Image (tube, rainbow, N blue to C red; front, side, top):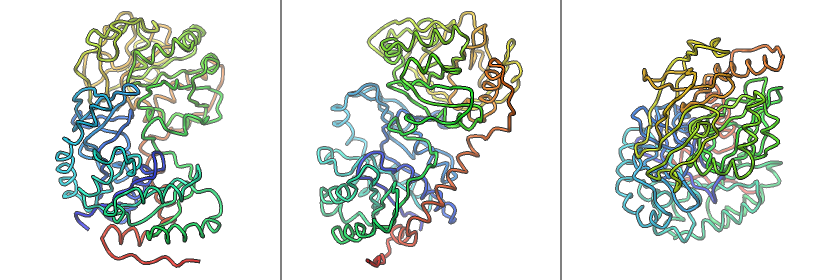
Length: 508
């Protein structure tokens, strides 16, 4: 098996490539293989800082966790973080090399091919198998010449390809057929199997279509994966979780759905606390009626702060804070809570200075140097309700630009032994902020916040031991693997992985 690879591509974005890669990685791990994920280029605002302080996309972090291995930046050597509709920050091997327009990046990215190939080859040598993820569709005919992540990557890795089609929006057979037929013959030949994903209903009704698409393309259908409620971290803001309400508890939690929202994986565990109802919102009325308001990270703090003001959400947050609703800002959301944001070098925006929400007494100045580090510390607060949580250990990572200058604040968290506080709150104890991504991942800190809000509402509630994010992910990985193992012909998948001849599926 050593040195073999398998690549998953899709007929479009959001067909389930990331999730099915995680599923196959977990299945291969369960079957005794040492496996790793790889994606040459990821476009995402959900990022992670490795132990070495390097930045990579969350999707490959999740996949590494499914494989039971430490995430490494070699699993995602190129990360694009959109800063606007036309520009992205370009991160190569975990470090930013600047911001480029879409046109500039198209000219630049062929220079990355050699580095990507060398990075992949080293990863392949270290594992029994590598599961490679494509991006969007391989049949974007205007982008094929400069491709570094789809069929170009499959050729570089000499990888067989499984093509995924999402049946939920309709038109899956046309999408599969069109994707294959738009590819050059040599790339069509790399596609060894088809997977239908997100199916609802009776598979027997679908069976004639499976036979026909096999005959039309001469590519076997490996299985039909049902629509599932597996709670996996999303690669980016094209996600269904933004439209859903999670939980049924008496504490109403809203997360501001910022235009450049990033690292909303911070909130994956919140609805597992039994006393909350959690939803994402862009509506003033939701903010005004909330008990807890969360301002998430953002790739463009200043632009998203202007957006809050434009649509009346900034004033709604201020009104909510004045009635003692709890407001918590993470990373960019934390920076918005301060008095002023200074950007003299135009790192974030063309605006050199802007007033913050003024709910916490500090200001932030953006610099060229970016903080990317894993962090750990202990909660310690000298006053107010949070003293009950003193000595609680917290771990996570920081990815941010900017240095804070503090006024009259109450520190509640120290990180990595640094004198600068890792988390602060106001004297009233209802406005809090931190740069620490993963601050809620043990469940204990979040439960303490909810317990405080319940007490403020005069509600007594029992508190079970919260689930950690690690335990939750392990549970979901195993559930996902069981569903996919049952849905796919895994014998055929292994034959493809080994380069062996396939068996023909009987029709009719």
